[in-house]
Amino acid sequence: MIPFSFRYGDRRIRSDELSFRIMTAEEDGVKKETATALLGSLTVTRETLYYPEGPAKALTYFENTSDTDTEQIADVLDLDSELAWDAPSLPDGYRGYGNAAYLRLKKYFGSNNNDKEFATDINVLRNGQCERFGCHDGRSSQGYAPFFAVVNDKKTVLCAVGWTGEWRAQAEKHEKALHLSAGIPDLNFKLFPGEKVRTASVMLYETSEGEAQAHNTFKRTLKNRLVPEAVRRQGLPFFLSFWGGSSTDFMLRQLETIRKSDAGVTGFWVDAAWYGERGSQTRSEFGDGWCRQTGNWTVNEEIHPDGLEAVFKKAKECGLRTMLWVEPERCYCKSELAKRHPDYCLKETDHSEYYLLNYSDPAVVDYVYDLLSGIIRRLGLDLYRQDFNMDPLGFWSVNDEPDRKGIHQIKHIMGMYSLWDRLRETFPDLVIDNCASGGRRLDIETLSRSVPLWRSDYQCEFDCAPFSAQNNMMGISQWIPYSATGTGFGVTDTYRVRSAYSAGLCSNFFGYESFAPETIPDELKALAAEWKRICRFFSCDYYPVFGLPVTEYAWGGWQFDDPESGDGILMAFRRENCPTDRATVQLGGLREDATYEFTDADTNERFTIKGSDLKKNGFTICLPQKRSSKLIEYKIV
Image (tube, rainbow, N blue to C red; front, side, top):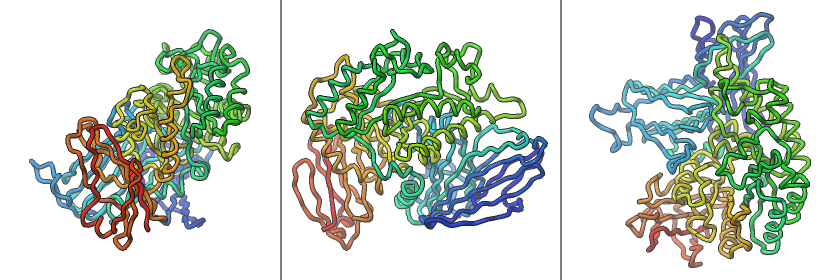
């Protein structure tokens, strides 16, 4: 059992102090352990999944099975583990980057609308040092993402927190041990009779197999055991994204152009601003009119007279998978929903311009389910995009009673999970896109129900720096098998589009009525064909062969390797201000006793190299021009 702890009344209780009744079962190689303990009127249940790949995932439930209120439940640590680890302490006056024996805590920045998203933040731990970190304002990957590692030359420990609200973690080094803890901060609540809640899940993996392999084992477990089956089976599209405030006539014309041009794209995405009152049309995402219509979830008949039905029918005829944007947790204070159902809404202050829908109320979840399932069924959607452009923590906190601190957050997140679970049960082939201002709700619970198709709002700007997409790809690929991002406006720019290559891809260059081109450029067709050829690799094993640089003065790139087939890809980017024209990298995952054929996708040159020579000499790439890229494909021959 992964250790956990909590305070009950005036007692601090560790999991090893409880008398558990344990039941076990096994399915598809996964052992499930359900441990139940009684504390007066409180039933504590700890569910743990032991995956054959090595990681374990645990989740705690608290339930009041009596007819009286429980005592206060507080200071819940869903992970509270002491790991034996004899490692030297960093002396005062040293940073410790020259000695691999020191313990390094690796935290990962979340999606914060900058060019360092998902980059690594490294601290070397001294004896007695305690590092505390977490997200902020109630979205799980805003601030820091809920994934972290502690490594040295002897061992790697990987941890992920599964909670889509506020979380905190800490790592503390002792002389011969490492203490890790994580959970939801500031909880202090009682449970009413019959009430049951859950807290954060945690996923933990301890291994000596080496850091890169540890990440790949962890990520493989996510891919094979947690990622929705619909995502694994269908893969992700290359979308052309249309602004929802563009008219039906415009969308139909553009779809006909896509059909005639054989563009090679596979997805049609209608974003925000398709809804609302007459006269509320918003021409782009850079105004706030579309925000002020949230809560008016009827199609704007002025721009879409038939309710978007012709548009989505046409997209299907073009062979495209379809997706529509909705933001069903936020509503504008003057919206129809806020007027009709003020009881559904939480305010942060008396002057709140936007309200948070109260998902702790089952009636609200039922309302949203009926709304979304009706839209999905009417338009025949293949994917549903849920956005969330507000910080919820303040709304939850101010509405909690003094003896129920944290209960609005807990029940809201439980309500969101139940909503997504119901949608997936009703529509088994549906893929849910989890956005939240671009990748701000990425954790193992959302990843088990959804996929991030827009992992960064930094890509909203048409001329965003391409190396920012490279940065978040290099960071996020250590943990998450499926994600996507945007290309920006320059779809004839090979360097820019390749920088955004992921398991999925999106370009919005075609979907704005004010400046969209009338034809599909040949360059985009070629890049779409190239991406389609290699996209399967982006969910395979990942090796950060260029390190994890965030500066435009370095090389960037990645290697993805399919360990089953032995083939893979290497992508290299000489960034805008990189002074060196060549780089030598050590490829990962290759067999020394094999011979590999490499193909340069830009020149079609083919050459073979023995695995033993690659290990000895590395692989050298030359790019004479700054701001240029190289795609190399390889296979065992």
